[in-house]
Image (cartoon, rainbow, N blue to C red):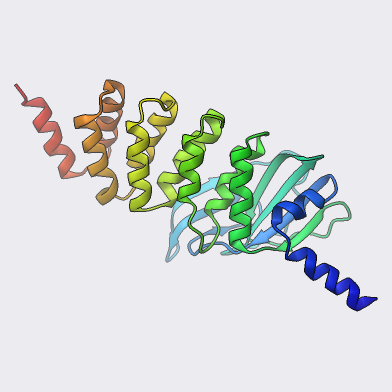
Amino acid sequence: MIALTLAALALLQQQPLEKRVAAAPDGSVRFTFTAKPGVYGNGRNMISWDCDNGNCHNRQVDNYSDGDHNDWDMPCDSGPVRVALTKRGATITDLRVYVGGEWRPSTTATDLGTVATKDAATYLLALAYKDDSRASEKAIFPAVLADSVTIWPDLLKIAKANTVSRKVRRSAVFWLGQAAGDAATRGLTDLVDDGSADRDVRETAVFALSQRPSDEGVPALIRIARQNKDPDLRRKAIFWLGQSDDPRALSLFEELLTRP
């Protein structure tokens, strides 16, 4: 009997995360996965990323007020990523993400344990693309934190999807600029140039380019400032170039101001 139970458990753990979440009862559903290097958290409401030798370039602080703020311990740690879903029938109605700490025992939450980062990112991005609750917008952030996965093609797909809400698309564009490298920069410039895309989404893409390393973002912003057909997007590109303190931006400004 014990052997059969262990075999059934092993088989369940091999199923895609989507099926495991769907099979869980309503309420809180938890899972855990490995964070990529440079991600730290206090196990509660603070997550930092792009950290190196104690210096963190980005930080998010959330104040959860949903009554479920006592299900973790609080050491500062480099992982793992912990996701708590709120499930109602077939819909995930909300999502919370933590880094570090440990889940406190619960008699009501369903804990799916540690899952592969690829499985976690695939599930979370599919949840974002499904866009049927406020959990969808929140699902992108933990996917960005997953170790050893490439998610920019999925983010670009979400950013371009007309069937996805503006909030989710803007979130995808922001993290596209934060999370990927050269390929993401190419995707962002394509999105800015797409005249059929929502204006807010295109403006967010310009902002995301401004957050890229200067060797990637500045040339892209200069090209937009020079060539894009939308004057408002050109102005926004020029604004962010003005914040860059980059000599190439100064050369562009001189060129524009001295143009006959």
